[in-house]
Length: 448
Image 1: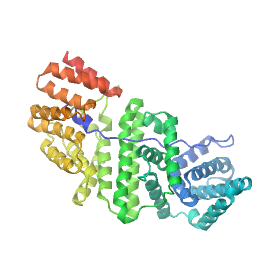
Image 2: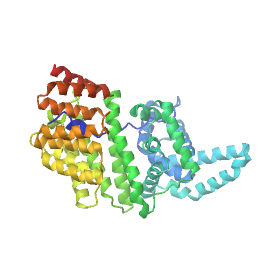
Image 3: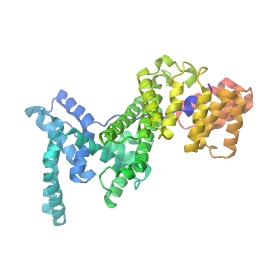
Image 4: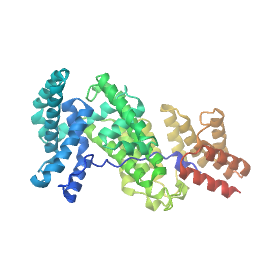
């Protein structure tokens, strides 16, 4: 297989849940602190989502939740861990929020009416909030996801807010994943919250007639989270691995929540299938030294067969619906790779036909580039080079390093070594991530 299929097909991973914000007080034993941190990692998303519904404000909900966990660190060493920690934390956060609003209202008369209004709403929902009603809490999470991914927010704000509020990542973790300064990332979150507040965006799942349109933004955010794992490869495999898990967790969450709503959206299955299939190759994608290993050289025994089986099953279900879209077609392409014992035995004609269908519903120069790779594998590098030269002549991919790397690979296979070296050098000049740069430098050295 060419130097590109593994890179051009790559679409991947997302991030470690944040550590618990409050610092443990001296009277909190270390094992209890670890237990509470585990609860924070597993339950903070649900708790925050319920508090947002009760309080109607993301900042207020975050503050109340952190105060509740601080209270747990302070009080549970003596009182013990409650039988149902989540309702305890929701109830405690509710009272912390009420106390805080009462204090502020005493010093600011303008806040008094707002405080009374929010307090009345909280009290009216008290029984509901403190009961361990799984369906209602999961509905809260679905509402929070759609709020964070509202189309009124800029795309970078949607991603940052979803990772911060739904996934519980710290600002620093998100900033590392997207290679931006923490202050820049924090401003994105602040601006996104301001849009929600200023436009009075409702905290709700859109009506059924709007759902498909709005779901597209949510899926795009999950997909961006998944792809951010490749960006994180340069900062460390651990972050990349965590980002992949987080994106898959988001996909599962969205699929489960829509099932609770009795809503069937095949593209959710398609996206989850795609992420599982791509992530199944993680252990084989790089060497112990961190060097990139292309698809045709990967040890396929290292591929995760459980993920492959689940990914193929989800993809087949989405295809059977006949209502699938771009994510499902990409998953179908990944499934062909996953089901092949070697690059030589891969059904490249089937992959080419799938790319043809994908171009019909999602025209894109990147899809054309991937298709050119598949054509080269089944019709020969001359045909692939012709297609890639046509793409580069349009200049849409003139600054995309993988397009030049693909051209270099075709020239190399055709024995056109000077051209191959020139294209590899162009790709190296454009590549930003260190694993890509090392791979391209090795190819240039081999051609000498």
